[in-house]
Amino acid sequence: MTTFSLKAYAASAISFLALKEHSKGQVVYVDIDPDIILSEGGQAAELDLDQNGTIDFWFHNNSFTFYSSSFSSYRLMQNILVGPEIEANFIAGETGEYGTAYGGVYPRYYPFALESGAFINAELNFYNYDLQVMGLASFWSIGGTFGGFHANWFGIFVDETIDKFIGIKFLLENDSLCFGWIRCDVKDNGRTLIIKDYSYETTPEYPIIAGDTLHYVEGIDSIPSEPVYVYSFNETLYVNLQDS
Image 1 (cartoon, rainbow, N blue to C red):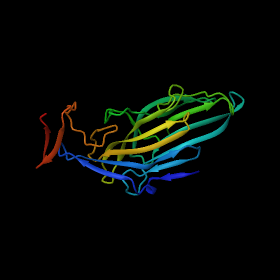
Image 2: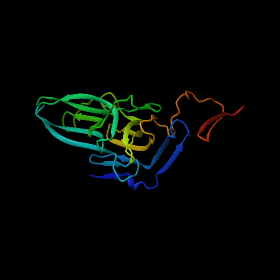
Image 3: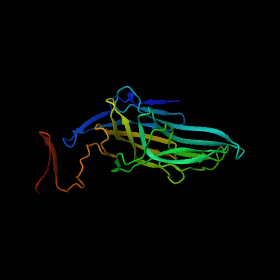
Image 4: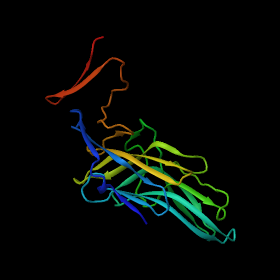
């Protein structure tokens, strides 16, 4: 198995952008350069988001064969998995159920593929299950027809996903739970995962916008077409609209 660790990306740019509003919030942004690419079964990646020596989330490109007693044949399963490394970390998503030929129904967890601009906050459902499915495909026989399953990044209804966001809630070193996002692609019929960048809010339980690298300021609903200058002084946030 090939493993990629974010520690190898020492040149990643970390930008600290703050606005003096609400609770002196600060957003950390990291561009993973070059992107982490998992294109073969058995490859994995680990992310230490706050660079404190503890892995926060892992990704796995999975592929294996198994014998199906229901179909009396070998089948091929391929999936892209993500999970929190510690119990205090969570991924935004939804749940489903699947049954087996031996009886019983089991839960399955599907991370959302969030659009740019989506709110990541406490209103989303978060799960800390350690095997969450981004993409999932099953083939009826070796080299046979794709069966497909529901998944938000790749599956029977999703061909590929480009520049979408995993919503996360994770434990910072100061024991505070903070929201963030990880931008990814799942392409090539669900066989390639690309991890591009991530960002997180350092203010506990404070929302972040998917794709944004600035502290969210409540009440600003639109951006005017004129030049806008935002600055802070003496604990006050100022927004200056330049006269045309």
